[in-house]
Amino acid sequence: MDVTDALYSRYSTRAFKPDPVDRRIITKILEAATRAPSWANTQPWEIFAASGDVLNRLRVACLENFHNGVTGKSDLPRPQQWPPALQKRMEELAAERSKTAAGMGPDEKSARQAIFEANYRFFGAPVVIYLCMDRTLTPWSIFDIGMLAQSIMLAAQQHGIGSIPAVSLVSYPDLIRKELEIPDELSIIFGIALGYSDAQHLQNKFRSPRRPVQEVVRFKGF
Ligand SMILES: Cc1cc2nc3c(=O)[nH]c(=O)nc-3n(C[C@H](O)[C@H](O)[C@H](O)COP(=O)(O)O)c2cc1C
Image: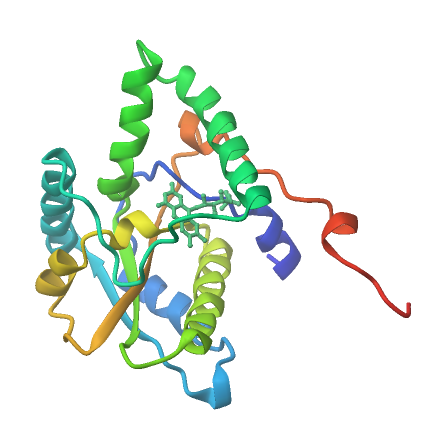
């Protein structure tokens, strides 16, 4: 698979098969992905890869928090508001995705709730990768983590492994820190769930649109 194929075929997988992913494959993915560039090659990432019983214990704990209405609080604060154009795109995405929800269950409300809950079930993924970095680092290092994140997802794609980057995966950092023994000096920036995609699942049929490149790019001097 070439890079362009990987870029176009990747999508956020929201329903995984329960099949485990061999640790050797995850190692290969992370070896390739950590070729990502970073400020002066600082490689600020500390990666925690969870699977099996460890991940399942965490899944149960996160679901319990979710069902008890515990508000998530990621280490990296969530934005409180968005510029109008971005807000509109988020609303359009939600509207499109709820059409998928409409086909999912007896009534739309319970289907939507199931979609929301799936986040805290880690979408049924057998593996979650947590990307961490020293708390004292600046947004420049988060930029490095972002490049690592996309590299992980593209490398996974080459191995036929689906992925989803999700803030919901890091909504309860205290639980993650405890289960994975993540030191306090590390900030848990982001999570990526990995596994074999259940291609037949309605949730995986949805493809998000993109702004046309003519709208996004201002070419100068070509
Ligand atoms: C920083 C970030 C946070 C995200 N958080 C969530 C999330 O909590 N739940 C979810 O279902 N998707 C989440 N996503 C996935 C986005 O909704 C998705 O990437 C976007 O809609 C584009 O769709 P695509 O990944 O299928 O191309 C997140 C993506 C990013 C980059």
